[in-house]
Length: 114
Length: 116
Image 1 (cartoon, rainbow over the protein chains, first blue to last red):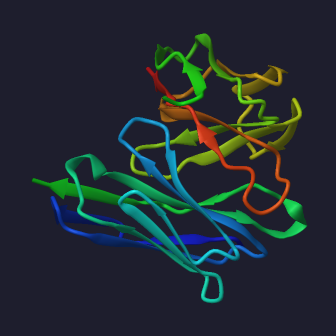
Image 2: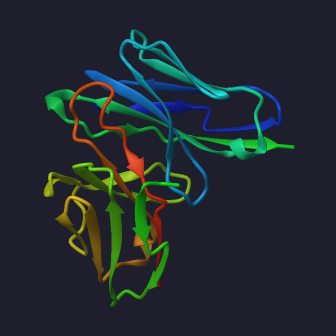
């Protein structure tokens, strides 16, 4: 069964600090992995996409890593801002039979305090 | 701003009402999705349309009826809903899968549904 596990479930940090969110998956065969940011009551917005051959990808203060051998990804946020407070969802695509349908993690709720 | 537009943003309906949620995209995507999201939970897939044909129905109750009139529009018709159906309904679109790196989901802002 395809599964995506995220940790921690929630995280509280002070403004300006760094943090790292984790994502482990069992989706096979693997196609790609995306990190989405979702503000409360709004639709998710894509931050990064990682394919099998990519180890690191940055988008401003967000840096995602992927280890396809251990089936792990991380999202590192540098110099956090109050606007980073949101849910961060790891979404993995792949699976047998050529099905595209992505598998969602349960998300990490990040709160940035001033 | 999202390129997937959902209307209405908020909807309150009684259990005997008939209403519809609408979704529109002009990115030329040929796959469109409906997701249901409860508070503090990830989105749950409901339906997938690929090239205007229903390809996936995740065992959704018949009180939810999807419709894809053309490649840019996706509707969700609602009838005889229950209070537990109250949630954020998200529409998404993507190119059908062509290989690694494609098929990114673009989400709308969602329609917040409250069933009284």
